[in-house]
Image 1 (cartoon, rainbow, N blue to C red):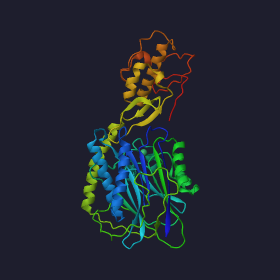
Image 2: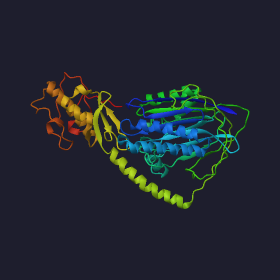
Image 3: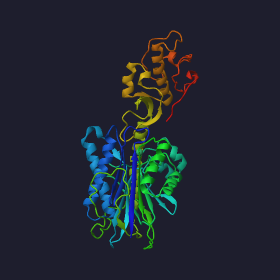
Image 4: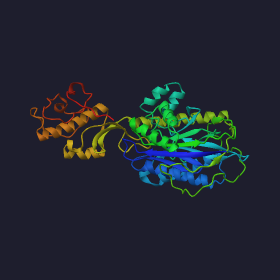
Length: 462
Ligand code: MN
């Protein structure tokens, strides 16, 4: 027999304005969901998914890999229904990775994992870290096809485009993995905010250094933030405590989603007492509730016919193509807006397109007071630009308009401040080299516009 000890942590990160990650730490069920959607929709998606998952898994009575899969599908329906019936939430979705203690037919216990999207489950065993889930992302498919390497995937511009998410369709395919736990195992559930910033080696180093699961989870969040914190980050660390009593074997079978018609398991009383922890997703938890569990090897029956594979491949091509097009559209533009009190350049479209969210390219040193008042409204809405260079030119233009209006840069006769009129038709005077007043100490943006490039510049990057 062994016990599970759990610690968790989540943080908004250094760039995003809200935390759309949700975590669940409840007896025998642990999960991380990373929501996507404009405005507050991402938060709604992830919290709806977690609540529905927990409720459905608890209601299933028998705790099996199949009931975990059903619970994930119930979560999918819950998010889908909410998105369908609330206008502002159309297109919202979420990732989900859930680890559950399950009962086998012979009364022994094991672990099952349900997974959709790019939140991950790692296993640290014998000092080495292994990723047990395979991301449902565009870059993962490119890696699988041998088109790019893992290293290229890590910096690929479309690395955040998912090929599968929970809640964006009425039904979803769930990846199920059976895990035979071993004493001393350490499982890590995390959102992409962690691997986005840290390498597997860095993650493994933290998991090895901090034996307390709560400390380890907190350190992982800190690691992501010190390396950029470009996204929300969440970590749930589940330890299978060491105990020498029972020798056990291990088989980890990462399966393609198994047919739901897998044979029913013997109905057994749940082996996990739900000790009043309540239904709400737990926040950063200390030493979590311990549950008992007997390690045992598990095998997964594979029943996939050639026809099913062919149909799946055809469907993936169509759906993948559509998603790739949508992703391209969503990310093919840039916009300038005010974020966290400063003028910032984002790649994407204001508010996002379905679950493709804009990402920060650069937050400048300028605040709203650096531009003329009449320029604030287009900034609030998000001023679209075809490229980063155009976006930077636009910011430069706004700032110089304000300076000129204040007489800071007396560089000859200039027209009255004028509205920006798009990259290609930008008025010549404002893009021409301008003599930099020695009096001003305000930093100027570096631009990629050859002749317009200026000296004495400082670039603020994220
Ligand atoms: Mn994320």
